[in-house]
Length: 292
Image (cartoon, rainbow, N blue to C red):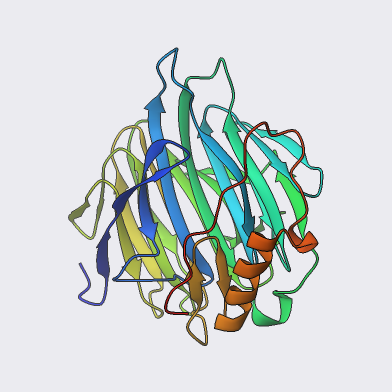
């Protein structure tokens, strides 16, 4: 494996009452292009009497939340009045801009849950954009070398995803039911990350460990991957950020002051975040803001 490539182990955390593997941000790497957060949820099956995923009202600024659903169903509600159930093979994209709040709940009757949830940092020029919500039930999908590729966002192999983006970016799902080998062309201006969502894969003859993110720096022009039977991989990429991104709780910004203001506004009930209607529980409290 190329010496410049970096293997990054996920850390286990809790979201909405269930354990998830967090691959970004971690100490070794905070961002890959504009991607600044990667949680792998499941695959898991809830017991009949278990509550499932339940994330109360919480805020975001200056980013897009990106959910790629693989099993189960999740209900999204937000302060714009959006209510959308996301099902396998679909993407939910919420653009926070200057401020939004939302909730996420798994639905009764759907005990299985498997998803990837990511954040995309908005460019500085767009961080105060108006919030919006978009749902993408149909995405470009095609076969190559016994592997199904689904383009989640950005461009690849002459194809363009319909997903709203504000900067050069790539999100690509690879799934091989019976196993196979594929060589992917990459944009050398991008840095990339490859993450196993299910199964086993080898890259340049070396195994990719479960819940391990493989980082590829700019200059990489292709990636040869061997997928085992049933393997599913997530490839993300984008142009490296020009300056460090501040990430705290559910907020990102290139300005520490913007994060301090957002934290204060959320705690004081400022109208910039609105109200999520229809959720029965309390909203989440921000942790203490220290060192900012």
